[in-house]
Amino acid sequence: MVIALSLLSKFCLAWTLVYLIFSFFSALEVGRRHYQRLVFLEFQPRRARGSWEAARTRWMKRMRLSTIFLVPIGIASFIASAIVS
Image (tube, rainbow, N blue to C red; front, side):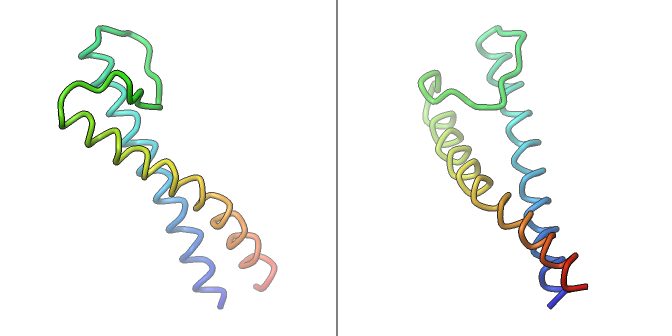
């Protein structure tokens, strides 16, 4: 049980890091295209140009939603694995 909870918490942490890295590089690319020096981690859907940016926007929304659900699960599984062990 401890191993499963530990793996779950590590998976949630890894997914959150993947989302943050992907969001950062996406924000850099969009900022370059729109001539902005500031980096916003949230890709703004109203500024999407073309089908590729619109698809990336939908993917980022799905990743953000799954990260919002996975962070509390990861924290809870980490605490539970610490209590059980």
